[in-house]
Amino acid sequence: MVMRRAAVLLIALATDIGLAWLLWRVLSPGGWTAAKLIMAAAFVGTAPWTGLCAANGMIGLVLSVFRPPFPAPPSRGEADSWSLPRTAIAVTVRDEDMGRVLPALRRLLHGLDLAGAGDAFGVFVLSDSQHGAVEELAVASFRANDRDPGRIHYRRRSSNIGFKAGNIMDFLDRDAQGYELMLTLDADSEMSAAAILRLVRLMQVEPTLAVAQHLTVGLPASSAFPRLFQFGMRAGMRIWATGLAWWQGDEGPYWGHNAVVRIAPFRLHCRLPTLPNGRHILSHDQVEAVLLSGAGWGVRVIADEEGSWEANPPALPEFLRRETRWVVGNMQYWHLLRLPCVSAMGRWQLIQAILLFAGAPMYLLFLLAAATAAATDAVSVFPAQSALALTAAWLSALYAPKLLGYAEVALSPDKRARHGGLGRFGVGVASEIGFTLLLDAVSAVAKTGAMLRLALGGRIAWNRQNRSDRGVGWGEAARLLWPQTVLGIAAFSAFAVAGWTATLWALPLAGGLLVSIPFCVLTADPRISQWLRERQIAAVPEELSTTTRGQPAPALALQDSD
Image (tube, rainbow, N blue to C red; front, side):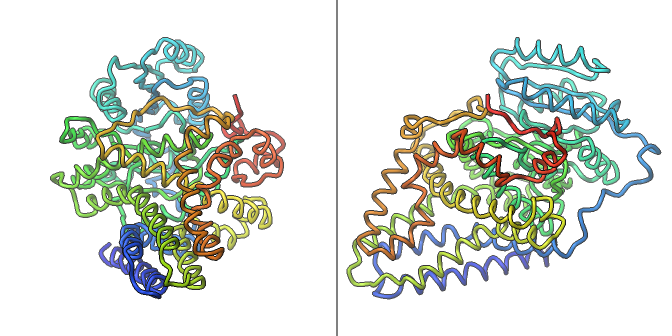
């Protein structure tokens, strides 16, 4: 692993040095000003994450193209020649619509029964809801209609101490006797029986693994926002996870769901400490991975996207709320970098999780400094060609996993066919890239605002999540996104002082700020969503495969609007 990690470091450094040279060519003409120095400092702040994206993307593409398809885990014989370990399916819920949660569990149990493995699994719905009467009735009905009611259980805590991590640990302490493994699922998770059995058998034949984390992709979505978001996320995460697994090995991340966990080491090592202020850790999963790997247990990412899904936020407001919750959780990792018994890779895992969000204020600082330089520097002529080269190179590095994921599909006849052919796939790619450029500017302001609130002592609540498709009105969008709009108007007014070339240069980086309100409304508009569906734009393979068969498969039907 040492040589692999050195290769990643070299690729990241080479990327950042190349970008720094391009930045110097943009900033040095006309001399250095305070605004230019701030731009350079902000670039340095974004460099670690940008270099990591480029490295993971390049390595992931090479492995995906030249390595054989993801192999089945090694086995000690045919499935019917050895028994499966007892596995608890733990589904955590908090004020969820059980009409969305339980059908996925029914499909899973049915698939396990068809595979002859159902008796090895028990289902535990673990509730942290404030009022559980409706949940309890729903689970009771679900249980009564199962072929083996005794394998289905419901438990609600009276207090959600420790949040989801506390919920899981309470279950392991009280109710997991007789189970060797645990499959963790969120309320919006879904997995196929085949994918789960692959993970369970892998854990069986590799007793030093504590977590086998499956790659998870978005369920087919009817609404425009999740449809476009997950089209790109799927391509990027496949390449990212492939590259990540190559150099992190069995010290990989745990994302808290769609994974199989070995109960004994998890109970022993994953009792989370409290933060210095006495509060509980919110983003628990990566801390659990770090504690397990530090204790000598393996945490492995399975970079296979077949059979593991989740739902994505239905509209921009829900997406931004999720982002700000994750900001709160990941920024807590600053306090955990000195945890004892953590490996060097474990500390990097925590830093990597911080960098995922720490780049947002750096991006915003770069943008504001660039706008200031454009409005106040009367000496320098805007270096249009150098600036364009810098922007193209920087965006290519930052989005390398996604762009190279698209390239991987384009290079594979089979994958092109699964995406409806090169033409349809290309339209989806173009639509998603435009969508992402608009979204990322809006998201950066929201994440920066969340960090500022945290720095000033504010708190951000982890409230119930809306998972139902909905429209967004103009008033709601304006109340949510007026800061982005005001900032966009101010920034582009400053760029306009330097001329139209500077304004055009800023559009891919900050154009989303100007149109944030209509972007929010239109990506939740049912008419636009229907238009995309009818033309199968940004359709994932599962949607296309069910359409060609004439009717949607029950497990993967489009998420309908309520």
